[in-house]
Image 1 (cartoon, rainbow, N blue to C red):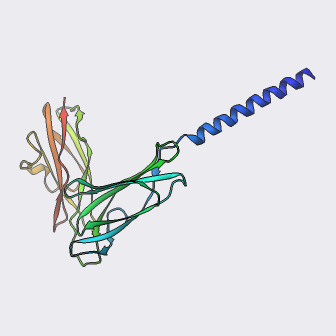
Image 2 (image 1 turned 90 degrees about the horizontal axis):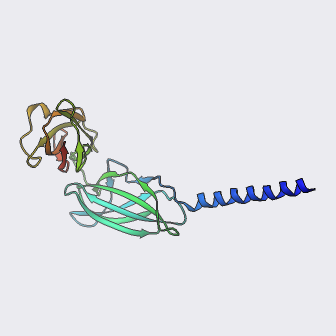
Image 3 (image 1 turned 120 degrees about the vertical axis):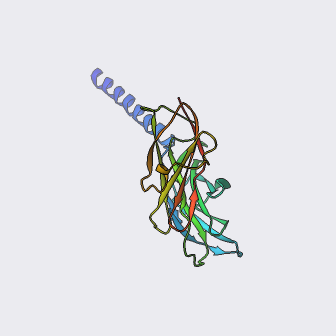
Length: 234
């Protein structure tokens, strides 16, 4: 009888511990990826024309939880300026008026309305705002700087470092790249070895100090420039 009572008490303790653990797991937001839906990445978005220069575009994403609200961020990639930060969106879509034939990026983050903590975040997608007009060629999207990123401290190996970037084009054209890197402003004349590259990385010789770099993407008809990024070689 005494052993049975002991086993019963131990079972209650184990059960209570397990329930408490489950409750804690459910109340803690899990940071992961929130899935964007449309417009698709690196696409031309067919919006609704509102003027000769603007169109209305609907951005859509997948829900994460009935208890989440969303923050939408839209950036003009030509100027690298944020044109919208909209908080506390209760639905999974948002209409925005944008300039036509201009590249934009967008991302969404979800916030748990109970804990007020970020619960999910999306990747960043790019698109051109359009309204059905015929465009012979869209310029490539500005390249994304992969490494070194802004304010990065870099150690050279045998006096060299590797620059990495990525590019995309809504017309699926073959892209070529020119890399500008200097210790002035990232806009000085590039060396011949760093022009018309088909790869998305390049090894360059550097000294100690601060450098600036950017990438020009060309599809044979038009071009675009990435933002200028600075880093330091120790």
